[in-house]
Image (cartoon, rainbow over all chains, first blue to last red; front, side, top):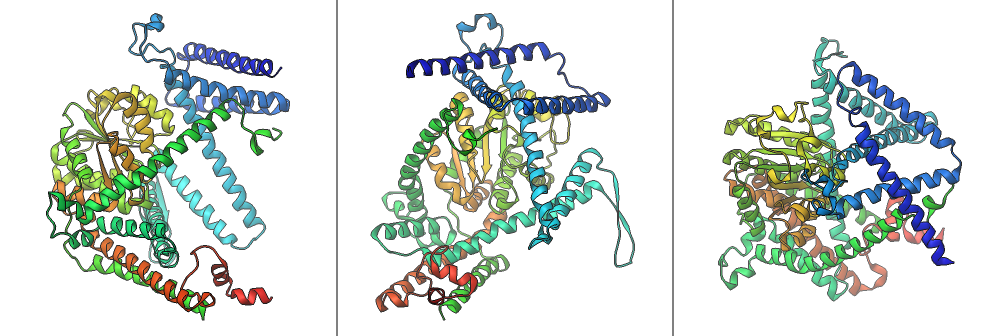
Length: 319
Length: 303
């Protein structure tokens, strides 16, 4: 009974996936003359048409019964996974694909990788919209309810709108003039959209980002003072390794052992040599083991998601 | 008393660190740097790239790690300019990466008489991660289409003869995150294109397995790696100038760790009730919770 159930599940997945892959292949070939690059007014028309088409499709999907929706998600996940597996594991050139012998890559899925890649980029674009929408919703609620620290949400909207507007302007109308009003009453001055964007990016975004990251150094220094304790022999070894690595990376540490020869057995006792040995031999063994474990876990997890075996809040909730 | 000590010790450490780094930025000291084998290997791999192939500088970094990845990018760009190697700037993990690298290339180019389009090209930021990289390897102009300034690749002289991954002589991934594994899996694993890596200091240990396995030809470890490469290229850039400041910061950290342990052992000898001087774990435990709201653990218990 159990085997029969599994056979049905696998049959539905493989059959559905192969049918979907075949449909995708057929669509790619059929629609490739339609999806050629367009410019000018046709481009905006194509964008508007695509948005309307996708909105309609999304609306139709939302109207489907929950069970069907879930099945659509499962089939879509399986098809996407199957496509990349077939493309990756089937040989790039093989006599098996004799009907494509005149092409460099005979694998029939290889030409589709560009179309699927473009589709992936388009779907990634949707996630940007989703992120912007979600952020706006959270911060908009903060402002509306005047929650504690709501002024930070106002700062978010100012920064978000300024970067979005001038980012688009510098791409599509870089010479657009912006009048900056001088509130001190001296004089107004005009700058271009590109100059404003450069100012926002180079003089605000970059230093702010760098500042946030550099603050970590201060917390690391306090943590080193408060947390790095020799409580056991292992901790002592770790501390010695940390000292060697820290000293081996900087000129002062190198200077400490600069009197040792640059070649020969004694050169191995130079600080930079010991640091490289610690990183390249001792630490690497541990990291390789951890990395191997993570990758085996990733394969198992990917398989579970691909075959819809994963259980949890997202996978079992009602769509 | 304990609360005061914790409050002030933290601030004193911050002040010491700020002073230690700022001092050597103001006062210039010549740094002694020895070039490590991984940095030298990367340099040699760059030298070996034939003129008919392009070098790809995969700038997957952003402003947060500019202090380390910026000098690394500059050193690699200068090397390309000095030897007349054409290269492409490319990014697919952090959108600002190619723009920041472009700023570096444009600042440095006049020193070597190089110009955009002829000596280098910027492919900009592309979405799609691993899926895009797989398609990119098979058809570079098909995936990139146009450069960062919307010029079709066919009209850029630096792109002559660049069609697939077989026309790429070396890829150097300059990154603060694990983007190298994507190149190892889908580029080196399939096409055996040489890979190099320039990473932040904290990421360096994760790159060593790839180096040991021969999957990457060379490695630049953080600012020290950039300083080593500057020495190989033959100029004194930001990395070499900042090394004394980094030395002093590292020495301060070592001194703080030793001091923290001395205080810890002294407090332990006195008895368990008088553990002070940050004897607990930073970021956890009742002492940290107490220091946040100004209430000692004893008071909290009695309340």
